[in-house]
Image (cartoon, rainbow, N blue to C red; front, side):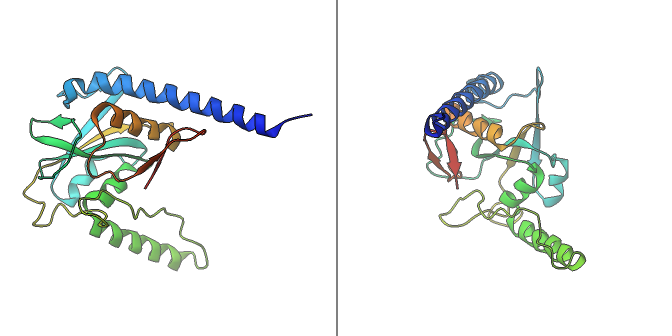
Length: 213
């Protein structure tokens, strides 16, 4: 005979151990890359390559990969209560970190939110016009970085933000799914402190750590 409760507990424990090991591996790597909580000048660390992108206008997004990865957004825009310790160039501080299967489009949703929503609706309209009766397949991201309660995403090309500097660091992570990339987020928070514009709720349980927007 079999005991499904015991089976589930065994699976949950194995999953939790695997997540913990992956998170520790990310923590070791991030600590090596960002020694002294500073973004380095170099971009290659063994098999790990990071890319840096200064953003001012929408066209600057073109330099960012549109595949899976982990990313960090830094700025010198003045924000209160940001306890994240990671800095770049002495005056840029991390305000958000995240992961996605399409990095470029996700960064657009954070930093050029109005254009992101317009582009999404345009793609949806064209798809539904071409494939009548079919549901639009593309994921929409309503939850983005929050500088004000209840306000998702910003537009850094607008007057309030355009005089500030914006830097995005990208770790390419092709070949893995979201469950692995999420551990990079948790490892980052443990090392440097959770950036102020990240508003997920962390839930601990028998199935490991999860981030919920």
